[in-house]
Length: 179
Length: 240
Image: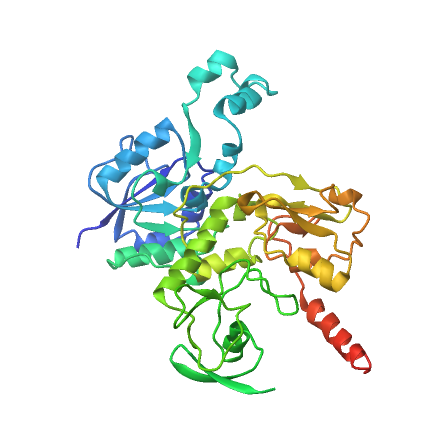
């Protein structure tokens, strides 16, 4: 049987969902024969590959780089899964939606303390922000959701087990809470 | 009290005259979700989660304020009702900024639990991202409007049980806000007794104890029925 081609991606989030993925620990070794990790912050692929079976996407869509990558992932993946609260609700990443992009950049980079790039320099270095942070399903079609901030390893394993058995992801009530 | 007979979900059920459909359903082990209702507080039919279908009625009715009547035919969990309930909770999640992961009430929240129970794994509506203020002017407690679902439990308990009537409501629809003493900072309220009943009954992290960190706030609401039971006994001339 061919191995499940799994990709993960990290958009506007804190990487906590990927930390939780690593928290699968020995279970990762147990399932490693059945799946192949083809892209993500945990492997060294530079380009998102073609014909991915399942893509776990952490983080909200916060800037144009996120947007382009997400669209590429959608085009090249059979199943796209919103991985964690930022991907599903916007969560902490979307708290910047209270402010306009200009006000935000001024407060953090132009007027803020520290050695962060300022003014024009900041505008050139930073990826261009979208006016509003969006959850994935408001941008592309999403096939399943793994809520949680971060989703605990049991939830991730429940989803992966279902996918490896060719079933759809259906988490129990206890595994479905936001937060 | 005269008994009546009605049909709920195809089962013949007997009830007492004057009972609401919600009371009858719960007595028979049928769980209908609610957010604004709490035994002991006056029912108000605000959250609409307890909507049920009545044969002969063109639209669903809130079971917490609808009295059971002889011969009624009631459906509590049709596909349509479940879909309405999901939609109502999704709208609540989209209207204000709940962000469970940074809430004092995380994992102890009625709205969060209800969403999971109803099978909500994402919200189909655009988030409004309203930036609403917090009122932390009171010494022991604070109010975060971002997490308020306008269930008005705080308003009702403050008026009917504590007798202070500190809380009230300002505005209409989604612009409604809970206000203390005709809209002044809670810390300057002269009517508030600091009893904390409103805080304990709030279903979300909108009202909380100061100093509680994320996921720490647990609410204790058994006091409500204890107080009301003692009052009832006292009114009958018994020993409270």
